[in-house]
Amino acid sequence: MDPLTVELYEKYEKENKTKLTNWIMSFSDPVGFKQVGFPIRVSSCNDLHRYSDTMHENRMRLYFNNMSGLTQDETRILKEVKKARDKVLQLTNAPNRVYSLAPILSAIHIARLIKNRAQKFSRCTIFEVAAGSGFLTCVLALMGFRVITTDTTQGFYLFENHLYHALVGDDLMELATGDYENVEAGKIIHMPWWHFFTLFQENRLPSVEIFTCNHALAEMNQFVRNYIISLAKSLLPNDKGEFILEGWGGEIMSQEEDVRLEFRNKGFRFISEWHPSAILTPSKKTQLIDSLIMRKIRNKFNRFAQKTGFYTSNAIIQNIAKKRDVSNYNKFLSLINVDEEKSPDELLFQFISKEH
Image: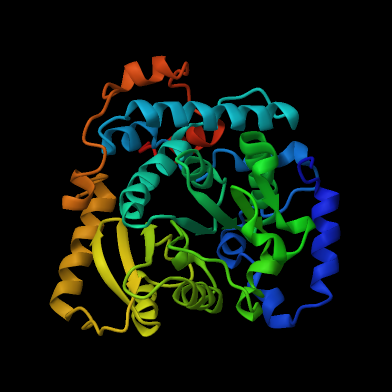
C-alpha cells in the first residue's frame, strides 16, 4: 500500500468521527501544542518536512556526549533511519536545507534502555504513545521488536506513516485505512487516534510488555493522560510489564508531581528513576508517596540538571552498551557523512537565546 495522503487520512478521520462521542473527540486535540501555537495539521504532504527534525534543536552534540558515543550496531541503525527519513524528504519535495539528526540520536538513547529492560521477556511488543516524528519506533523495529505506535497530531501522524513505509514497506500495518482487527499483523502497527481512544472498548486487546511515552505526559490534557495510564495498566502484566519514559514533557498543562501522583493512583510503582527518565510497573503492591524532603531534593537536582545539561545515571544505564565503537564526535559526523551545519530552527533558537 502507498503512503497516506492528506486527503485519505482526513477521509477516514471524518468517517470515524461520526461514530464517536464528544469526549473521545476532545481527546484527539493536542492542547499543549495549541497553547504555544505549534502547527498541528498540514494541507499537503509537501509540508511534512516540518515534522522531521523538530523539538531537539541544538542538542546533537549533547545527546552524543550523554550517550558516550555509539556502538557499531547503533551507527548502522542511525544510518538506516536517516536513509528512510531522507527518502521521505525527497518524495515529498522537501526544501533543500539542513535536517538535524538530534531526534534520531535521542531515539537511540531511549531505545538502549528499552532494549536492556526487554531482555527478561521471551517475546516483547512495545506500545509507543505520542510518537512524534516516529524515530523511536523505527529504531525499535530495527532492533527486532514489534511496535504499536500512535499520535493524535495529524502532521506527525502523516510523517510517521511515510517514514515507516520507507523503512519497512509491507511490514507496516496502517490501521488508519483499516480495522482494529488487524492489530496483530505487521512489524510496525500504526494506530490512528480514533482506534487508540476506543481501544478500551475492544474485547481483544493487544499483548504488550513495554509501554513508552516520552517528553509528553505533562503537556497533555489530564483526561488524555489518565486514559493512557489506565490503558497501560490494563495491557501490561502486573509486576513484570514496564512503563518506560524519558522526560515528563514541558509543564504546559500539568506539573511533574501531578503526573507522578496519577501513576501511583492508577496502581503503578517506580522501579527506578533518574533525571530525566523513569521506569514504572503496574503492581498490586503499595508504594509510599515520596516524602516532602525527598521531593524537594529531587526537584532541586532536576533544576540543576536541566540548567547544566547534566544527566546522572545508575547501574541500569551503566550496564547498557558499555563498549562504544564511535566515541569521538567529529569521527561520528564523518562516519555518517554529515557536517555540523545547523537547521533553520536551530539557528533560530541559537539567536533568541543569545545574550545581546
